[in-house]
Structure formats: structure tokens, C-alpha cells
Length: 522
Image 1 (cartoon, rainbow, N blue to C red):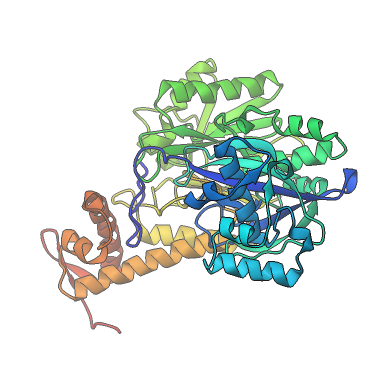
Image 2: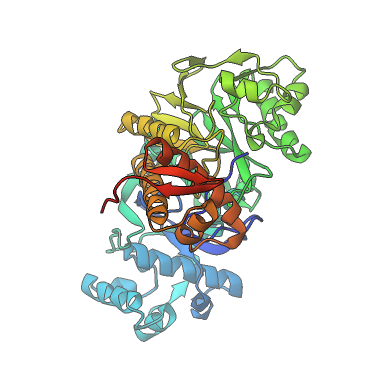
């Protein structure tokens, strides 16, 4: 079973789904009809939440947002969210969507932004001081989306369509974004269709809506924005992060901080299902319903593919096969098949370099990579045209990965991470077994390698300073981790000690005890 290794500088998320926090976002537009444009920005690669994704300006509601008067609005909650949207837009882009702002010079607006960012004034006080007013008629509600429950950070976000005020020009004003600019919605949607960018579902829906309905009357455009149930707070179950790669998170009894495992449905005409892992009947039924829908639409399920044998990745395999009449093949590495001999029938072995060819427009070709470390039979899959890498549990969208003997090997794991690094720069996105897709592959791979090497160095240092058992080492190295996770951390330490022993840097000093060997290095 997958388990996330606790990070020494991060307390674990609660086991239950994170409670969504109120937030607001602005779909900022300018121009008319086919020539209209929307402003978006790329989140920094080092950002923990959706790093590398393109997004709209926005953020979490502050307590003070309820203090800002909003004209033409009798609903106090809606007024607070409009205030949140206006404040976040101003903080992140310098655009002040307030009545009276068109009389201000650019220098005055910059001064106001400095007053807000330095906390010399709250947003409400700033607006009142300069005689500015927010008006609800300038903020058109176009949807309320809730982050899927697999995410450790969840938001209940109201989206507002706002026309960029005359004489104001947005530009990135926050470290959250590394670049931003205006784009034609059709051009933006084309980038997504070519797998050149990643966006979250509400952003994808917005650019597609604008692309298809730029010439619509305002009321028709709003209707199109609200036409999908997810824009009215219904759960987002299917997340097509890039064309042909749909993530379908299912609830599983995995280890914290994860609560869900990502099943993937990959392909256009032909498709495969990767890692249907839930043991829960309602989750199995939801995934089966989606597969049924695809088949009814003329698509063909080739097979079920497994990245590895842990229960939270395979528990739904046989129920899905039975639902489809029992004739669906299951494919996995030979070592995974051996580990599953008593629970899952594997019909086909996948070896290093094998291809899974999926017909369609466009076609997809998944090249199998044997990437042990988390387990001995772990597989990854690289699709060259889309520059997509399915990494299973070797890299995940939240936390880090537990390497646990006897299945886990730190040496093999580092070698597998090194193989991922060798594919750079020809990887745009990583699809992990848990959490959101990762649009920052270089930063994420380097982060994982650095984390593992730092952990090893700290463990060796602890042994050289006299810690001789995994429990003693955890006490010195995992100082910021809850005691509840120390047993898990001890298993991770054992995996590192095995590698250090192979490297002749530590030796066994008795039952469950270790000692440093050789001269200490600085």
C-alpha cells in the first residue's frame, strides 16, 4: 500500500478530506466579439499548489472582505466575495475594478497598491479614503467551483467575469505567478488541445466557453458559463488535465496525507484504465459508470493497466472486470503479477520498452519504463507526442513517497528518478498516483532527488553522532513530525540504512543496531 513519508518540515494533513475555504477568482476580459481577450498567468513552478498551471487572478477570502461596501448588492455574503475578488485582482495584477478609478493616474494606482500590500490600509479603508466604490454590476457571477477532495488544499471559489477598466493594464504583481498576459480564448484553448499547457477544470471551462461564445449576448454567455453542473458546486469527478488523459480520483484507504488514489483513463478511440484502486462499492460504481459511458459512445477499452501492486491501486480491478463481463485483460509487470497472484489475475506482462498503442485522433503511444524503488515491479509510462509521464507512486502531487523494505529500495528509487530526469526537457506534465497533475516536472523531479539525498545525509549524520537504532535516528532527523508517524518514518529509515550499508558507510552493530564505518566527512 502506498504511504507518504512525512517531511521533516511539514506536519501531515488530516486524514479526512480537507474542508474547502472560501475564495474568489476573476475572469478578466477586454475587447469585443471574436477579438476579445482574457488575462491569465502561469503559477510559479515552485508553488506547492498547482505549480506550473495557468490560472486566473484570485485567492482566499480574508476576514476583512466583509467590511467593504458593495453597491447594487443586498446579499452580504455575495458582497464579501465580490470584495475578495476585487482585492485579489488588485493585489495580483494592479487592476483596480472600482468606480472612480479611471480618474487615477498609474502612479496613484501604484501608490494605492503599495498602501494595501504594506498593510498601511485595508482594502475597505483604501477605497473609502480615495472616494472609490465597488459595484456588483461590474462583477458578473459565472460559476462556483469546488476543488476535488483529493487535494490537500481545497477552495470553494466564486468566479466573476470582469471587464478590464479603461486605461488600466494588468501585470504580474505577486510571486505566485512567474508570467502573465492577455490571450485570445481560442488561442488559449488551442494550446490546451496541443498539450502545451495545463489548467484546472474551471479555467479550461472558462476559456472554452469564451472561445465558443465570444460573440454571444452577455446573458447567453453567462448561461454557457453556468451550463455544467460543476459550475454550480457539483463534485468534479473527471479531470481531463490534458487531451486523452483523464484523471478519475477514487476514495481509498491509503496512507496520509492522501485520501484518494488517481485512476487514469487514457486514450481517445481506444483507451486503457490505469490503477482502479478503490475497494468501496460507490467509488467502483462511479468509475464503472464512466467507463460504460465511453463504451456506449463508441470507444473501446483495451485493458486495465497497473503501475504496481499496492492495494490502493488494485482493489477495484476485479470488480471493474466483473462489471464489464469478465473479458477485460489486466496488464502489469511480471513482479507485480507475482505479488498479486492470490488476488488479481494478470493476463499480460509489460516489460521495459513495451508500447501500449491506442488508436484515435490523435493516437497515443505509451512507452513502458520499469522504474523500481517504491516497489520492485513499478511501471511508469511515457507518451512522447504529448510529453506526458505517468509516474504512479514514484512522484505524487502531495507530500513525498515512502520507500519501505523489502519491496522498496532507495538505490533503485534514486535510479528511477534519474531516468525521469534524463527525459527532460521533453516532459511537460507528471501524472502521479495521488494529488493533482504536476506541470512543473523539472522542479518536482529535482525536489524529490534533493529531498531523498538530504534525508540520507541527515540519517548518516545521526548515526555518526551516536544514534544506532531506527527509532533513535527518527528522534533526531524527524523532529517536526507527529509522533503518530514515527513508526512509518522508522520503516523509511531502514530503507536508507540498507543503502548506506551497501555503500559501506554504516554496518550492523547487533540486533537492529547500526554504526558508522570509515572516516567521517565534513
